[in-house]
Structure formats: C-alpha cells, structure tokens
Length: 226
Image (cartoon, rainbow, N blue to C red):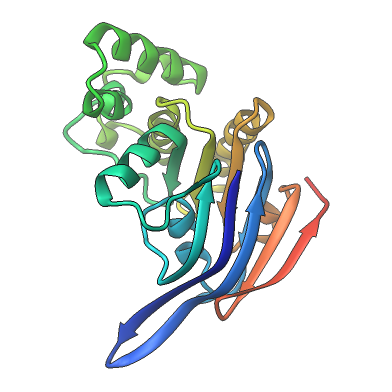
C-alpha cells in the first residue's frame, strides 16, 4: 500500500515559491489500476516522482507498505525503489550502447545478481513482451514500440509491487501505443499496482480509478471504467 498524508512539494523558481503539490491525501491499494490526469503544470509528474521516491516531499508523510519513507536517506530510498517500484517513461531512457538484453539486466547487475540468473530472468521477460528475436539489438536498431517493450522489461526485472508510467504511449503511434497498453494492463491483471500519468482521455479512461489534479490539488478521485 502507498499512503500519502498532507504531502506538499514546493520549488523556488525565480525567487518565488511554487507549490507543485498541496496537502495531498491519497491511498493506493495493492493491485489497483489508476490514471492520473490534469492540465500541464497540475502536479501529475511531481506526484508520480514522489510516489516513486525520485523526489522528496517538502512536508507530509508517505508510508510505503507501512514504513514512513519520507525521511529516509538516499541509500535507503534507492533500495526501496529497486525492490518495490518499476518505472516507465515517455522517452524510454535506455542506454544506447547496451543491447536490449543488457538494458533489462542492468538493475540486476546493480544489485549483484549472478550473471547466469540475471541473463535467464532478463531473457524470459523480453520473450514475454515479444522481443525474443531482438535480444542482441541496441536501442537504435529497434522501433519506438520495441524500445518501450525493453523499458517495460527493465522496469519488471526486479519484480516490483508497483509500476509507475509517465506518458508511456506519448512517443508512440496509435498501434504501438495500444500494444504497450495491453502489455502493462496484463501486468496489472497479474497483481501489480499500475499508475499511469497521461494527457490522453482514451488512455486514462482505461483505468479502474481516475485521479484528477489541478494546481497541485487532487480535485477528483473516481472509480469506474477500465
């Protein structure tokens, strides 16, 4: 479970304080499928970054599986990210010089997993997303949809409980975007909590719960659709 209480995130821009999140209260249960929508500048990506432990709140408490993580040091936050949270971004963030297989293996390399084990796990994940014939291809040899599949594989290789996706189809054509949504929705059906930031109402409408942000506030929290 992710539980936010009174979460604020402020930045100083041009000498002025900008509040990107304002007293956000939010509970996310295991296995939920949630879309996060709102106009540009509403705080969507900031919320996702706080949930994913990529950004620290200025105030408030954040409990992840019962543990208050808001005040943890950088090493402890990194460990929680590695073990519990997977990320998918609009622009993939793959390492150009590494093959698809090596990109997916990378989180396991960083945690000291034995080479044979990480190779077997990464291979199985890439095969599960339809890239059996692309294991040795570098990102520049792959289509946008294939690169996003590699990114999904990398996000899932540590077997996280939560998958956070920031505009996962925003850089793809409609066909590739639809295929990516099918893959990550299948992961949700297998029990992983899925949170998607999107500007696209058609994508957001597929979720089972819909959060709407405006000016750093949660102004809507509805169940339905999907």
